[in-house]
Amino acid sequence: MSVNIAMFQFKITDSEFSLFRTFIYDHVGINLSDEKKTLVSSRLGKRLRHYSLGSFQEYFDLIVASSHDGERQIAIDLLTTNETYFFREPKHFEFLKKEVLPKWKGVNTFKVWSAASSTGEEAYSIAMLLDDLLGHRPWEIFGSDISRRVLKTAQQGHYLQARIDGIPKAYLRKYCLKGVGEHEGTLLVNKKLRERVVFSPVNLKKLPKDLGFFDIIFLRNVLIYFDMKTKIHIIKQLMEKMHPESYLFIGHSESLKGIHDGLVTVIPTVYRKT
Ligand SMILES: C[S@@+](CC[C@H](N)C(=O)[O-])C[C@H]1O[C@@H](n2cnc3c(N)ncnc32)[C@H](O)[C@@H]1O
Image 1 (cartoon, rainbow, N blue to C red):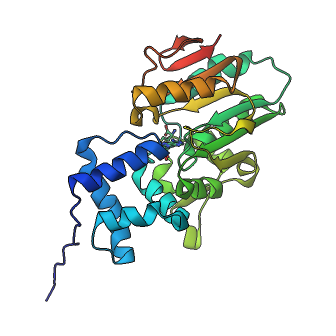
Image 2 (spheres, rainbow, N blue to C red):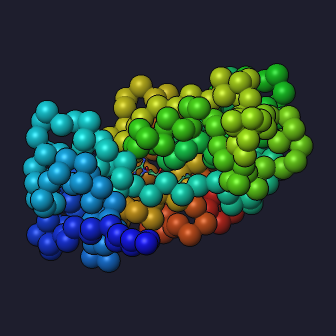
């Protein structure tokens, strides 16, 4: 006899949802609309089960307790959306390849920041391009995200084969190792490339002072989660980390309308600092 057991869904009340909405807005900047109520209850419900709690209020009390920093981070990890893939939005990589890299005459290390890197596919896509096109000229890539869970995957550089469609064949051969045996169906970014990309947690709402300056910043598919006030704050801080003439890339469905003082549009979604 087969028994169908439906997973018990915790119900989140409006006032509980409001607590988490304020929490994620204050800590991360993400602006959760009312439609995200089901998403919040399904993503956090597993933590209620984990602690055998009876309500979202009890879970909220737990994450705000000062002794539960770790659980607070887990809640943040669960409430962020980390969708990404290699060579996402290929026009940006074409632009880098054709317009930026051939014209770069700097003598210092060419520095790129993937500022909401998620699991690292964006940073490694850029790394493949720089290694291929800059040859022996010095370059560095810094990848960061607020979610520590995704940064672990990023550091490992180990992905499911099903997720690698965007990687050009020549780069697959040059920079990736195909998993065999127990790793069948996976791909590992090679050590040489992994060693050149550094990942670390950074909250875009509160940038550390010692980040340095960048020639390129990728800030893609993250601004959509922020309201205007947070966007203005983040762009202003980011611009302080950009060299003159450096580039800022945002996602194709995002806009800096009304907030790009000091940045000129080069092509849609690519800006240059003046
Ligand atoms: C949809 S992913 C984008 C990944 C990649 N940039 C791309 O375009 O494919 C958005 C990422 O932004 C991160 N994020 C959200 N709010 C953040 C914040 N305040 N600081 C840093 N990262 C944040 C999330 O954790 C998530 O991994």
